[in-house]
Image 1 (cartoon, rainbow over the protein chains, first blue to last red):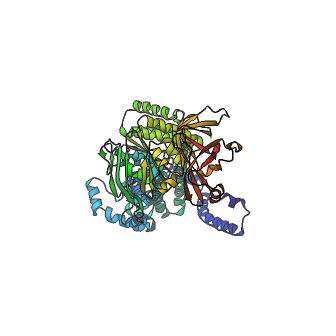
Image 2: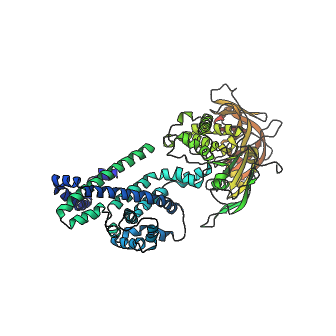
Image 3: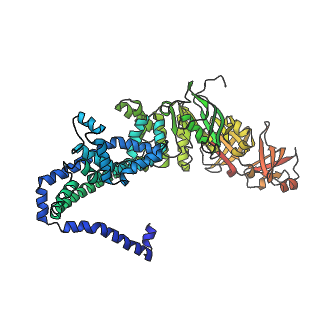
Length: 266
Length: 369
């Protein structure tokens, strides 16, 4: 890589760099435009808006909650996928990736079919005193449905990179398989697991389609932006700007903290 | 031997690769007495490590049984076998300190914190890593990492310690230090099985040797038996040393700091070595031994080892001819020289005639024991 950088730029590289520049512009330009066109008084007014603040808070914690709740099952499952061979493993792996390829509105409808008050899971929830439809539980289910592949795939890659010999050495020292998992496999795959957790959390926060169908209310911020767009772009834009800013701050901070922890582990 | 209680009995173990059905191990049987230092010697990729993995339970054998201290552990879970394994490469847990690595087995077995601290401290002192307890494994040298690996394996107080090429990847100085440490551990009564492709390790450490050839045991016995009386061509070629003598290295030679003498069976060899005086073996490659007609005086050669004796055997060996001469005084001591067929003809060598035998002090390799 270094040697490539040190050599004189080739025409092909310059061409590719120009193409890359166009792609970056395509991503950055609309966002920049949104930020530039949002005036400070508008933004201040939005920050003062209780509905916006509680919506952003709701989005942050439901996505975080969904990530933590589902990681309890997703991380061990990722370990299984990384370490064991079993019949229909390819099918299982494809099923894990499924939420990434189906339209999220379709995912919402599919979820609604099992979580609505008339469906078995919905009925069971009703009996336990809560409902998935138009509730935080429904929001979390929708967020997790679309974002869990990111955690499973990242954790699976992390576990696959842990040398099997280290796990065998731990077993040989008298550790039970569950102790080996907790004390050797998870710490050594931690960087990937954490990266997967952050990705799942971020992806959950940005989910609109599936959440909209399960729970229009209480409004998570992507739904709120859509709701205000119905009134005018003028009302929707500052909410979007504020939400993106908050997400970026959290995302960058978490990445930074994760890096610090990993550096300290070395 | 058969009636003595064995620490480990491996009976008729066989193993083939699942995919190709290539046989890795064929009907392997081993008997390891308590406190033995058992070296499994074989060329690379001969399935030596697989034997250890089967004993440790990391790999399942296709057939056969393993008895450890009177208990059948053939199907026992890895963590319940009481068999410690030290791998060739570093398998220390990189995310834990040296202290936590050594304490790992202790924490699995549940003694209190103060007991763990005490035990780790003792083990660290034993293997000489007390200064390293707060370090992380990636910062350790190869020798240091292997010391910590040994302490970690010993912490579990295994009945049997398995070593998979434990010093092969170390530099010369670290090798000597780890060898001394292994001897010390064995001297305390720890039964050890050590797998290696290096015969000098076997000579230096073993009380018992088994030679693995094509996935089967070609010969088992003491160091003397294996090196003096190789039972098959493979063993003879593998150990590769025809001239092999047990004796004592002495500091008495006044020719220089590295020039020492080695006494064996009434003979005395000049040896050029940096090793300290003590019991051990010397080996002389037959290619390094020259034969002279008794007519030419020994004093005219630079070789410091000059003997005389009668030819007891003449063996055509590949491109040359191996001449065996008895240079013993009173007791038979045979030494082999590899020379060309032209030289045999030129010197007119036949059975029974007396010849001079010369080899340089630097051609004598001493291995301490």
